Length: 160
Image (cartoon, rainbow, N blue to C red):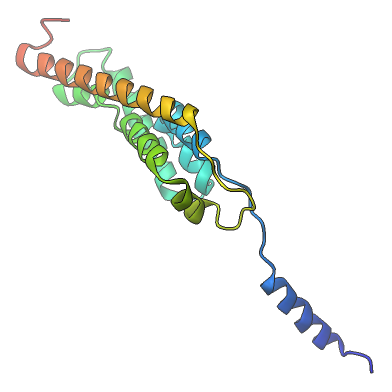
């Protein structure tokens, strides 16, 4: 007995619905590396979620604001422009996300970003070294920005 074409279509749909579609594996170390070096423009968010991610575009806009403030700080400026130029919020946020990403357990990372991937994450020493260097760089940069902003606020930049 031959099957009707609509019956065959329904069977094909049922088979497709039951198949798990493998997706591209998202590497945790690469995500942290992108967040450290290109996190100010949201490269790690674009890698994870694509170009439709709203927060990734917020990183881009915050970085453009920071770059504009640095450009405007070349001429006589106000304290607000100096503070915006000294506190690259998008870059700091990228470093924080690198640390959060790196500290996320592999099982939780795979459940969130690699649920349909056939591979499992296995983070190693390169990620740990990257996290230590990120923390050191971020803390040093933050202390420098606070010191410079304090100098600008209290002395008008007399010490540099």
